[in-house]
Image (tube, rainbow, N blue to C red; front, side, top):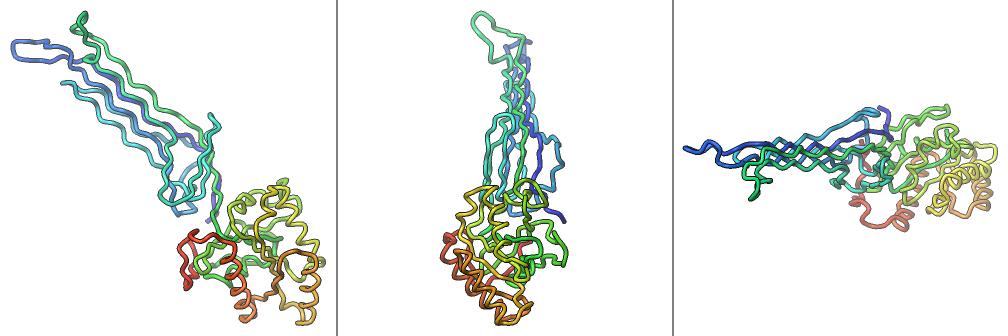
Length: 341
């Protein structure tokens, strides 16, 4: 099921109920005075953050969603019932942009609610207008329309770690090896069409679809997913050891990150040289040593076919995360390697 990370919808808060013209009917006094109640307030529209990253699929592009209108006023000076609010679930990490006003709202934790559109006030009934000079007003006020807003919803995944690299750098395979994720892998470009998530000792890992040169300008799939890197605390930069020039490959991805947002270049980074099983131990060490001279960060070699290699990387990654990821981001469970559905 493909991830939907952008939707544009229209929301309408409920119209306020109309005020009404009514008179009291009492024994021996047919018209005992005005008694028209006020209309009820229209329902508000809220966005509610939930942990389902697929939630935006529930909405159709451009559809209009409406809260309930308030009831009209009643006799005997009774106010009409207020309209039920409309609560729309969106994934944690969603940014809601109101096109008309330019306002933006971020939903960053489960259960967070944001009021997006207020319901219209109910109109006054004729009792409201009684005065010394008008004992029996025969007019009332209609309810006000609720607010209307065009919302552009954009999901930015909230993950502790973002796996980046060119297509076929081994990111998905590495995610599968470190967690219980079941990300699709294959020997062709753009095997990963949507971000894959997994949990590693309580930290959320995100495999970001492969970047290519020009991704920041819209080439390939990269521009669609670069936004998901913005909130990660740590980057794991995967470079395949069978690349003709591992240094140039690394520089290509770093350049695209910087062109999209220079702040991404300051995120702590662990560099992984993948597919080390394609070389002898001496060749792999030579490539790693040469690569280490080119980058400022530590370089770790790994082969997903070598359990000891994966275990070494897991230990190094745990230490790196403990150093760079703020405590309390998630509940940490050192025995947890669950896949996040």
